[in-house]
Image (cartoon, rainbow, N blue to C red):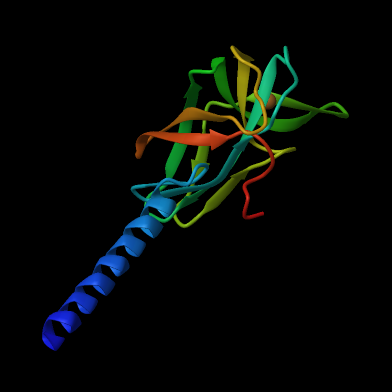
Amino acid sequence: MLQANIFRAITTSFATLFLTLAVSFQAVAGETGMKMHGDLVIEDAWIRAAPAGAPVAGGYLRITNKGEAADKLVSVSAEFAGMSEIHEMAMEGDVMKMRPIDGLAIGPGETVELKPGGFHLMFMKPNTQVKDGDTHTVTLTFENAGAIEMDMPVGKAAAHH
Ligand SMILES: [Cu+2]
């Protein structure tokens, strides 16, 4: 009788432990704005909210290449936008302008940050208002790692900032 009770207590605590592990794993794997894919880690991905009728919305994220070979972000696409591009900011005369680039290299061990005022994703002709609290699925295509689909939340920089 006593043994049965002890056995039940042990079984219950194991079940609780496994449940806790399962839940915390899911929290990591399902976190929006974060994605691990092969040697690439994408973090703090977000899209800046835009007023109704705005022609563009900017997307930002940080890409770390943990591998031993260089990779390159070559394109971006998203259902909610008519067209998506990778942009850089550059001086034209004395005016800071943005313009599309055909790719963004990430060397081995390197981290590249796409942030306001620098490199960014440009979602053009959005077919819906890009509203705070929404999430949009975005596909990033890399030369080596291939296509990575991820959810990017709209709003402020990721919660852990
Ligand atoms: Cu732009």
